[in-house]
Length: 191
Image (tube, rainbow, N blue to C red):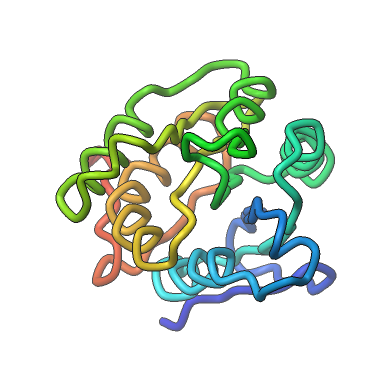
């Protein structure tokens, strides 16, 4: 079965519909100085890996903590996303404030997301220890930060996403059906 991905404004009533947010955090991409590559890399994974219907809500914002916080709140609270994935702004520079914004809007931090992403990235580059990615929940929405480069995004999301569908199940969200050849997501046998 081909993945079903619809864009905002389109209706699709096959199975449980999931709203998923992608937020690129970049001063230069948000101002049009260069084309965002991180958001499309995440979308590419979703198109390959998710079989159930989704509506993907994309935002590209500057490295301003208040703007990032407002965007995460909008996607979680108003749009009703069950997952929001960010890319960019997780390094050690002064402008990298994505983890702070994420922590500020989350009810609970799920430490395993950051720990696992850094462990995955360390297999490829020693500078992974400089990354400050985190994950957490806001109500019934899972929010987590990915690296900024497309190659690093795919290295991490391909592994991290294996835990995401069951996490959404536990938070009473939609049942996200996966293409197991792309992402063999874990669910207990009773699911």
